[in-house]
Length: 356
Image 1 (cartoon, rainbow, N blue to C red):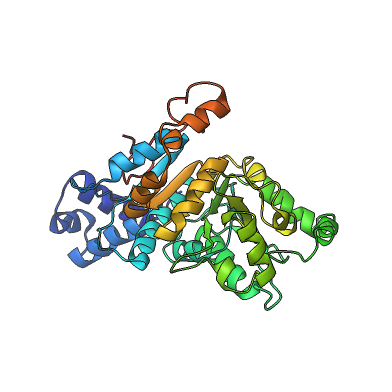
Image 2 (cartoon, one colour; image 1 turned 90 degrees about the vertical axis):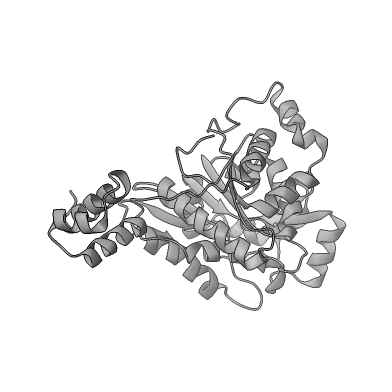
């Protein structure tokens, strides 16, 4: 049951947004000051009681979102940004949207799987506090490398999501990549590791981005000592364009026979398929090619992407992808209305229920 303070927040927000009452009038109803009413309304937004959606008339986001949704059978949330927006601004806007969407989807008695990385670190900075009960956050891939334990980086990131939702936190204290596949196989038999793997398998939501091999802002796994020169050369020879949860992908979405993946600690696309909602968060021109690979692998159910990246994604798609041909063949028939996940197709920047 909500306390008196929370009831005041709800009353003030309802009168302001639903009844279109002025703050002075609300103050008289609540027997308080106008400044207090202003604080109550701000608190309502911070608590997630109020969600504001902007729909610029000139935005290309609606059409871009529909095209991506129809091509890959997913729900897409395209975030409008100016054509002049730089990488950091695009990332920040996508992170803000993702944080709001995640807060609306994640609730009590749920498990959230988190992959570490620069994009998710940006999301963590915009999380509002939403109390839940019986929930948990679990790290999806290890973070240590031969230079560092990775504990400070990954632990702080995963813990920030746990704090935002009052959720139990399950870290994954293994390297990002083992030196030998046999070492990974042995560690996967350890009870402490199996406990975390079981938590990952029971996740209700997985949140991740795509890693880019190249670009002006290389992804953390490629820029922070996780791969040696021989590994990088091997990846180029294998035709790798990026990764999801440190599992490497080729442009066509294939990954099974890439040797380095036998040493990776993140879940494969096939393993992620067990998770009902799989949210991919992307911003930046260098993410277009790995994003297309991730979409082709079928690992994404919900995509949050900025308008410029979405536009470049569609430009990079061959006709067979744009027409949904690859997915149609894989299903042996027509692409179902609403997408593979059975969700509504969302074509504009919108919150849950904001369907177009």
